[in-house]
Length: 346
Image (tube, rainbow, N blue to C red; front, side):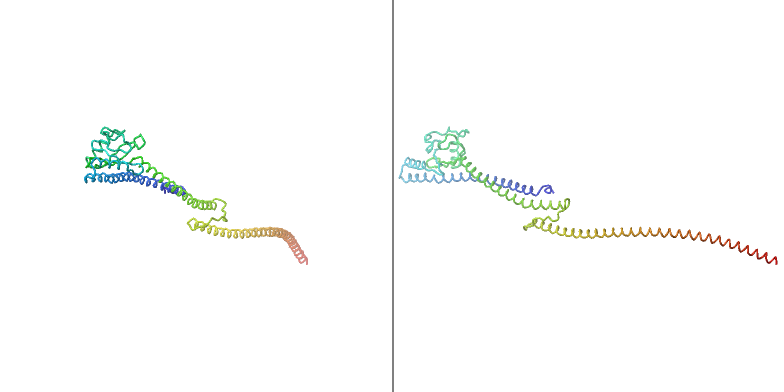
């Protein structure tokens, strides 16, 4: 019921917004995993490279054991070969001993021969002492600190892998700069964000087209029904029924309904016209009947008047007849009296 208070268009945009939120959440998790994997991958690469490069020391140590080189010659040759090694463009190796004292550093030769026990990074970490501690404790391991990049002076975060070469008491190390990992992470994040933006635009376009394909015919249907229910009731209006979706089916049924309703209205109009004609005829008949009734009433009045006149005449005749009869009776009585007198005189 909650969504029944929202328009269909708004519901579609809510789906898009939720999809984008979930996509961003998943993308963020993937990016965090990617960052972790990049960090772990860089560290693992460094570990493998240090382990592989320690083979160079092992090679020259073997030459020393075989008597082909003195220890000094073997160490010098190994040190110079390691000095020239690079990977990932500018990443390098260094060698320090257990004092700790710098044996070889390709990007900062001024450190070579220096006592590193008092050297600390800007955070106060005695990084070389920690490298010695890791080498003594485990033979190899990771050390995190801050160190300037080659050609730069500002220290940046770095994680290094160090490994003890026990025969000579050397610690071979190499590291990766965290900002490189972060730069790669930012690059991947920007690419992912760009992909999300592209997907969001495509989804927004798709939602807009779908919303338009739903809203336009649905709005037309609502207006048409409202016009029938409350307005002029234009039954000649037809909805666009092209397509195979539910709205096209609704439009076809609406058009069929209006066709039937228009036919019914036409039949009702025909019946109304017939009733109107019958009513006119009935009014005409009533008028004629009224006129005839008036004429008959007038004739009846005339007849009644004549009857009254005849009645009066009959009454006069009866009265005169009664008077005549009375006179006849008197005359008869007088005649009889006279006759009696005649008889008595005889």
